[in-house]
Image 1 (cartoon, helix red, strand yellow):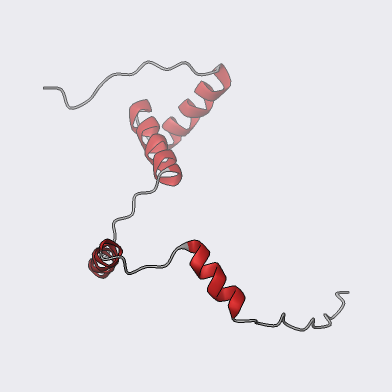
Image 2 (image 1 turned 60 degrees about the vertical axis):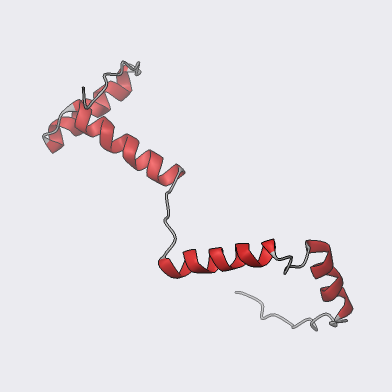
Length: 98
């Protein structure tokens, strides 16, 4: 079974010229350059993060607490925060920037 698939893409002439310029400067094939560009794009847009062992344990513990009904709703949290009667912080005069 093949380890790669061939794709055909259309690029404007200016972009092809840029690809060729970079490819020659870095002594790479078009495929290598495009693969790296796609990897960078995908990693930036769709980062994959795996939780650490401690994070997985905390997630498992939290899910178990939810199953047992040991949680508060968002509305309940807001009620508690409103009931604390915290006074707003006093305004502080700021220094004028030059």
